[in-house]
Length: 425
Image (cartoon, rainbow, N blue to C red; front, side, top):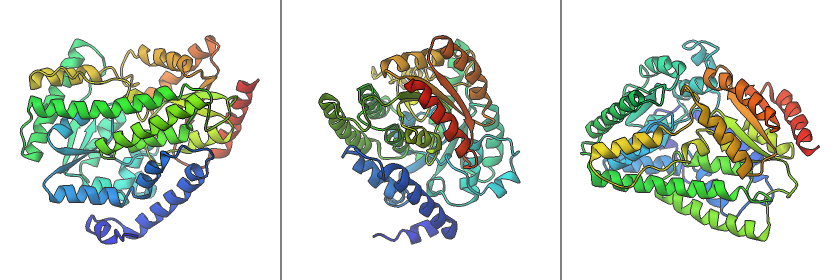
């Protein structure tokens, strides 16, 4: 077994705290994922990725940096991976899915800040995330007021920090703003990498990212089969891994898994029984290791067949145009692609509810769970009208507002179990 301690030490990690984090993650992963029955064989690749999540993958990043490449970290799906790859950068999603160093974070941020923002600070201040320490540039985005103000503070701890300003409306003015911001981001990447963005490089990067998203769309489509050929936990894990794994290797591994899943579906073989209640989860993103609510749902005897979230289908449904053209034109095509995402920061945002209706029918789901992080105002405010609309259409819907803590697990379990019983009735 490789000893990565010297590498972690060189990144400035708190080794004792980092060991505690890895021990916790390993235990939770074994209990939630490895203990599942009827798992597809192809999940072995993703289990390996998770076993080396702070090891081999970080070594790959450090080797790439030694060879002159730059590592670009981000917190949101609105940061265009295509531009990063086009300039020979490596795109990495950063840790925002668990509580850490809360005492330190509470000295900087209000206690009623959403868990995702606090997590970004916690992993940085606690010195337990090798990804953020490996970055040559960290990219934030002004998707909500909480992030907008928090980034002003976070960049005092991460000096190489770039913020993309986001429009709040999908209007012509909004498109113009995002176009200008993506062009400014491309310029920042050119400065960091020492390379020049060309249409040929951008076209190749778009093709690479589209291939990854097509594989994720295959995964989404096969989950419509009855019985579901893969658990919701495993499908969520795959989406989470997509944010930091090598995109070409990830795509190849996922396509191989989809071959297996499609064959399972043809044989009528499932990860669960055919009469298992089927649920769509909609709402806030669930980054590693935020598995609390999905684990409760599937332990209650249901199966999640779709995630309408940014760590899920919201970020993979749409592909960028591969038509080519000038760099200016292709950045405009990226803007068109990214502005189709149904993030709750947009006003108005009717297409999100439309897609929840659509995917519920496509996946033959029996009900919807709306999941929101406490103090995430965009999703909490959208939750009420969404729940009312779905219930009016005879789609059973449960609303859960929570954070990354474990204190409310019993309460959530009771509510979920009652909801699953309702779906069985």
